[in-house]
Length: 520
Image 1 (cartoon, rainbow, N blue to C red):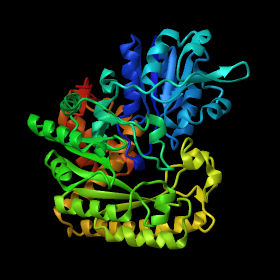
Image 2 (image 1 turned 90 degrees about the vertical axis):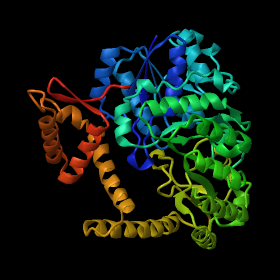
Image 3 (image 1 turned 90 degrees about the horizontal axis):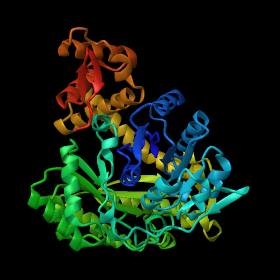
Image 4 (image 1 turned 180 degrees about the horizontal axis):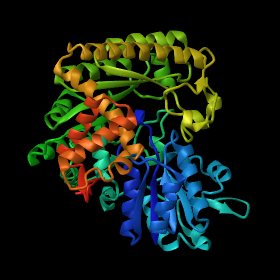
């Protein structure tokens, strides 16, 4: 079976990184004997014409994709494009959004044939055997599909208990040089599962309440592989990395024993960290821990079933400061019961912690308690346009707080941050910034240009015949001139970007034209 998996576009503001879940599913298809390609539109520009070209070259029999709620509409449209290009291809979609929106997805998008529910690796293996035989679909666990004018849902597949039985994610199918050029961390998991019951989160339902762990040595092996691929920063994407402190220490000890040098980040809860654990993580290269703090209101914490307290949050923040760990607190504006008074509590609380923090709007994703039991909460959903569910704008209101009130609160904070940033930019132009702040400014300029280079396919369109005689320096200068003309970017920014790409061997010159370097 020939399987094409689509990595759907992801906005720059949401830190697009190599798609971990899709790479796990790709590995499952590969291990079952399928011929697999990933059509990547995260760091490649999307067009239906490009999709048609890639499909013609590979001729897939099955085209699949996944998404989160925010990029679901575009991901679904791309699958429908694939169906339009080749009506005989079987199209399927997985991920947290469609797992809990399966019937509505199939009703709304006739170009999608099947939904994979929950963890997809076991289902992928079964589909290699049965996926093209529609009469066999009722025997495949964990899917939903149309049947006799309705939607048939098969028995939910049990969670995979032995995570070490899974092959490593097939990242080699991705255009790794393009991801490395963009520079966001590559993600890994050391476990699946979340024991908590937060009403705004899908973790418990999507991956189960019992945490399942990977062997620490296998995690370390994967980290070594990622370092060999050229990645220097890793994000541990576990729902709750610090669920088991003894195991956290074991992984940190293994990292130190092997002498691995890389930076990494992780998610934690304020009631699962202590000083010795944070110290060990810092020693092993972890430089940032993110906490879901959500609110400064004790009452809303209870309503949200967060299971923590403000005092525990204060203690965790203090421990971060003491151990040299960068702490980041995430707050959700618009939880049930939100009022002007609770927002004032949150504002005061967040500012008192001494760590970085940010505000986001509540996004009631399908499958969350707050979305499925809306009648139990002080909440009104204002839009089901899922492209708006990026947590950067309000899509709900409470009885006491309108969407405009919520937006005003968040915008006030964002405007303050933007004002500080504009001052940094002005000071940078005057040569008044220190080295670290200067690097931040330049890094942001580089990132914006690089994202455009990637998603507009500028190396492909402008890098042709950059040098007719193979002169690398002349070819680099020619490409830089073309980038300046095409993007309007400042020459110094283009120069920095080009120098970085060439220094890291992310571009290669072949027959006088620039191309992205092949995977190591």
